[in-house]
View 1 (tube, rainbow, N blue to C red):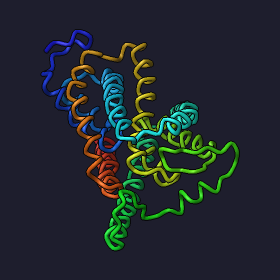
View 2 (tube, rainbow, N blue to C red; view 1 turned 135 degrees about the vertical axis):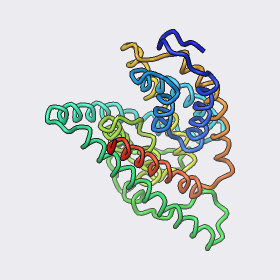
View 3 (cartoon, one colour; view 1 turned 120 degrees about the vertical axis):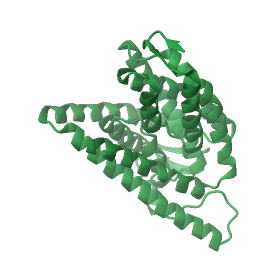
Length: 296
């Protein structure tokens, strides 16, 4: 199939399959999947200057579908997501400014790459350790609940930040928490996303769980809600620069729409610790991909 915007011919079935695979992962784990979709799109023949913008457009559509399904399942805390955005946007800008300063010094790719590897590896190993501990607790105590945390001290300490105004997050099951704690988590994920050049899903989902105490299923759905907005903003920015092939994005979304629905529904059949354990492999895979790129 000929795509006139990028001036390339690509088998649409390949693009739909890429969208489907990334859609399942996004719907199940609450991530954008750019770490996987980007290289696969480039391999399929999408020009490198169109990969990021087109992936963001595809990510926006996929996240809308997945977030709607998760909301129907009761897994989206809109109040939490909206408050996080207040911190995410300035955080992204601060991260981008930090990148510009590093570029003036030099060696920015090595610094960003190694920071990315360190953070992803830390997230992957910590999540694997905590989720395995939670699985053992659930089995030993014969608990029937969906959500068990292997470590609760971090979220407990964040609740001690009692700077008004305080807010109740009914969907997340949080009786009272400072708005500033939520904005701070949003700013932290935005800063890292702007600095590392990633969507933030890898970072946001664990922080929602471990720092704020949000249940895993709600963290997944709320993360997708935020990705929907941030990816939409990024799509408009790249489209104004002429870096989005909307036809490729729509072709990918034919598969992503189905995959996102499947991934979202699948979360009903897995407990929080199992979802977190499976999620722990994604940051580790992404870290390996970054290391391979740096080595090459």
